[in-house]
Image 1 (spheres, rainbow, N blue to C red):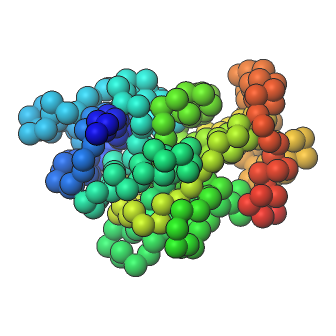
Image 2 (spheres, rainbow, N blue to C red):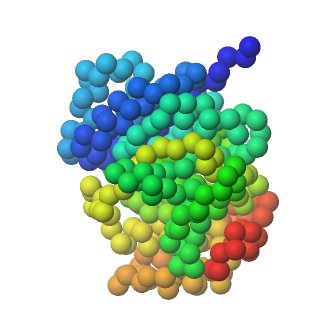
Amino acid sequence: MTAHPLISIIFPAKNEGKNVKTTLDSLFSVKTNYPFEVIVVNDGSIDSCCDFLQTYHKKEQVKLIHTTGIGAANARNLGAKNASGDYLIFCDAHLQFEDWWIDELLQPLLTGKTDAVTPAIATMGNSKLIGYGQTLKPNLRIKWNPRQNDLFETAVLPGGCFAIPRTVFENVGGFETGFKTWGHEDVELSIKLWLFGYRCHVQPNVKIIHLFRKAHPYKVSHDDIYYNLLRMAYSHFNTARIQICRKLFVPRNAKDIESQVLQDGVQIQREAYFKERKFNDDWYFRKFNINF
């Protein structure tokens, strides 16, 4: 019988309070046949949320990386860079798990049915509220998919929890390295995966529980969100869609932000992506019936 591959479970954390501990307690309490390591990227927290790991009973399975605040996308990239597993599972640091979730989530990857997969994601405190992957509204805000009975395609993999082979993640260059603090990182990665010819699916029969918060425990700038939006648009969209993105919401210094995006080399990245991709953005939005 073939040995199960090592799984690397990556948690970016920033000012998570007790959530990191409760999440890891849940992870280490559930059943799985897979060997796994945990990588916690403490991205400039100021609330001591990861200090417990110094004496944690499973600390030999946890790799803790400290950064000074590199943002959600790059914290995940750094976790992946330090991972040893053939398969990566990216998770928020405020989750609860059920027995065999790892085994069942990985099954469609191991059998070649998909290239990246997300579970059903239930709301902590109201387990009847469940989303099954995401799609996009005409303003590029996310919308949760309804349940389907079996494995099905999804336009967007929620960053809160998804699994992907390391080779696929590396082939697309991981999360966008040029993004600021937070915003659009899971949307951009999902679009990139589809355009590069990979498949993203929901495994609706696997469920994790997610704490949905009303506000971030750290400052998120509207300027950074706008920067990320334009960087994603220039990387993947035609000129008409870039124009639409400019108008989705307009900060006071919009022109300065767009100038910065262009100065930061996005045109070179755009050319490289357009050469590499198998499909264009028209194909993506048509495939998922997104009116954008």
